[in-house]
Length: 182
Image (cartoon, rainbow, N blue to C red; front, side):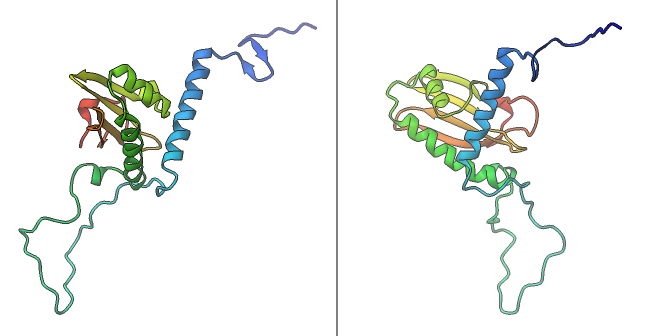
């Protein structure tokens, strides 16, 4: 009786040997997701953005005053306020603050220095986009989409004039800074 086999060569009890790059990428992705969860731990769970109610208008209670249709609505109707879920909306402020604080003391914000600070904060290379220097300012984008969210950040590192603001990325597909909404 003879045994023959075909298939993948096993190198350990765990299965086929993986490529080191694949392992590093999985580890980096897991660390990135853990950092996002840690930053947003005080935020509400993910849920789709709430849409304004539709349907017939409710009757006003006696004694109330009707507001003219010329008055701007209080609730936002476009932009990140409407398109980001509650978790991303909350997390955006936390990311904005931690990044801005880390970049405020940077005297010469070159793309290399900005990338290093962002990576030290836990933002992975593949999520940092369009680092470009213009004069004494370095602009960048961060793709923070996770768990179905659409959060991205747009920043300009310029010492004490550093600004980091939320933006909205497409729900799926590659991150393209030109497609974001503010």
